[in-house]
Image (cartoon, rainbow, N blue to C red; front, side, top):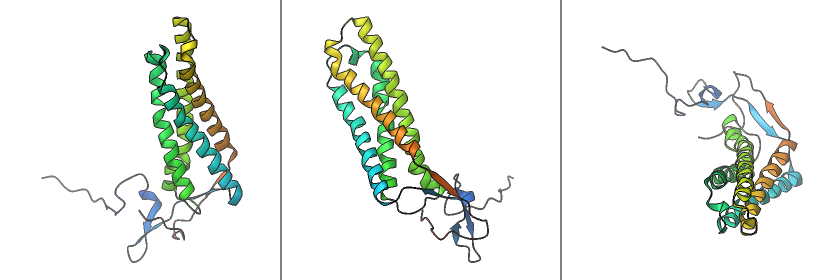
Length: 193
């Protein structure tokens, strides 16, 4: 006969954020983990949201521009594959941006991962994919000895690369502080799951 393990399951499941919650005397779980404060307020925050949205939409529009290319570079797998793979980081970046733009106040660890860290990682992912696509496009232009038919694909790749670098530069300018909380007191800003 097998014995059951004595594991207490919470309504939060058994995920990576369980250590951030603790029950009070009534058994109600409260957030006790660290809070994160993004130091942008008012006009500065709106300006940052506008700039990041513009860069995200430029990166998304670059897919349309590169997708209409009829040249041989757009049909070469080592240029096309990283270009298409850049769509995932662009989508995730926009998802994180919407999450951050709609959120008010400080973030819990889960909120920070879903919004800010998603944007940071996606910006790096887009830059890497676009850089690899740019290198592949240049190699394809040299191999095929043509550049006249490849202008729209190259422009799309370079727009993606510029948008990714711009996102990284903007995100690195923002200061994020961690506010540690004690284990004994619940946070005032509970996040409902």
